[in-house]
Length: 349
Image (tube, rainbow, N blue to C red; front, side, top):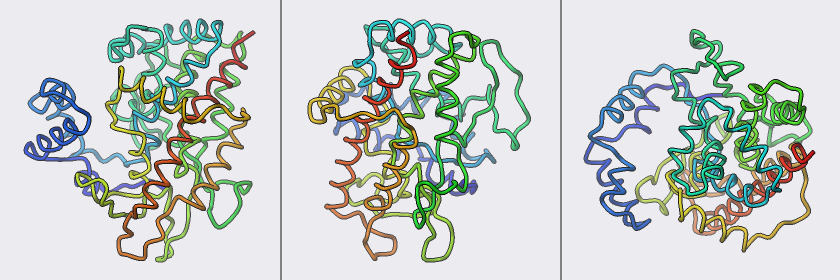
């Protein structure tokens, strides 16, 4: 259920230098970024970028689905942080301080509240390790050495999603993916105080991340296309999006991933966006059941996840675009509230 074409990866992930400049300028204008900010976001002349591009050209690894982009996961985490009880904040801070990558999260966040910054940045860690050479894809790569502070070095791509058939029921056995079951396994690890510190510190970033994944509608479904092939998580459908002139062609899954905002959203812009979401979407009756969240996402995907356009490729209409944005704002906010509820219940003792 994963896209494996190296050519497809190169086509979607690579831009020449002129294209990167145009892309940075466009996003800079949209989000009022100065030239220095754009350079910080797009270090086009650095060895890092050249090595990253070379990796995507040569990499034989599959391109698996991300859930919400980094902005979406940070928003979920920021909303949750503001809802955590004092004792829960203290415990998640202590656990994250025991994680090998804690110092990196604090540095990257540049948040005056370092503990909050680490919590927010930890939310993207399970996606970040897909490109981290310390880790490996089981069954595809040679195992990498076990490093101190980690219980294992696998990337665990199948933890991020669950493929439930849209022509069936959310109660049917999934075709693939372990999102719901693994989230509950990690929560048990976190909640049992006599579990090893390494295991608990490792489980927490995954929990923060997977709660967000469970609220992304296209991370819970698979359907059969007109050609009879499986359309896993919307990865098999290319759409035309006139509302994003810089990325007017993408997979349907990528369209949903990008709805929360630009992936570099941090700092005051992140905080103000989170405050706006909380203001517009107050807490409702909460549910700490990952099965419920996944069933909700599956239902949304079934009813609202796919464009009804008969164009080839399907075109995103104004109504579909606005409906998708509204769903995204609501689901990201719900995920934040529910993550806080989950952590408060597990750690308040």
